[in-house]
Image (tube, rainbow, N blue to C red; front, side):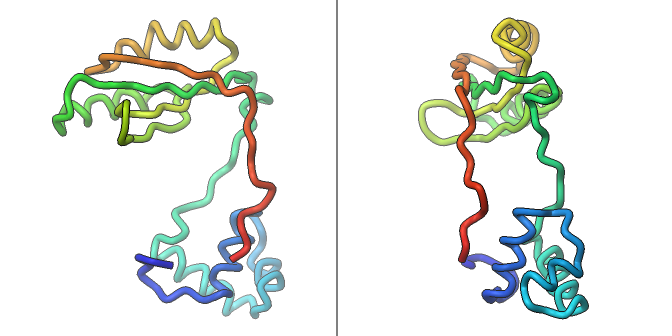
Amino acid sequence: MKGCAIAMDTIDQHILDVLQIDGRITNSALADAVGLSPSACLRRVKALEKAEIIGGYRAILNWTALGMAASVFVEVSVDSQEGTALDKFEAAVIDHPAVVSCHLMTGNFDYLVHVVCEDAIDYETLHRTHLSKLPGVSRIQSSFALREVTKPNPPTR
């Protein structure tokens, strides 16, 4: 991989593929899946973590099961590109529990914010009480996702 701090081989790639499918797999099962001894597998996983190729492990939440059936992508333009203005916006936007992610973008808008909420009425409240009041916001455009299309498994390398 370009830019990696360690030289990765096909076994490391396979480890990453398996962990993306099941981040809770035991080291023993992971070792079996990639054809290594458990100790060799653990050394490789620790090296991938140390090199920050593996950035962490987390749960993927089912927003619909949590009552948050509306997934909204919000394009936000801000009135200043000054570093401190961007820092203030970022600190404020990420502070709300409905915000899943926020990305600084190139192109026609400055940020793409992914939020989840119960429905359109809940989103309107979020828009009025939080998004429109964020520091430096000059324009907001929202798009509701109809459904998520995902890959069943990460690509095999």
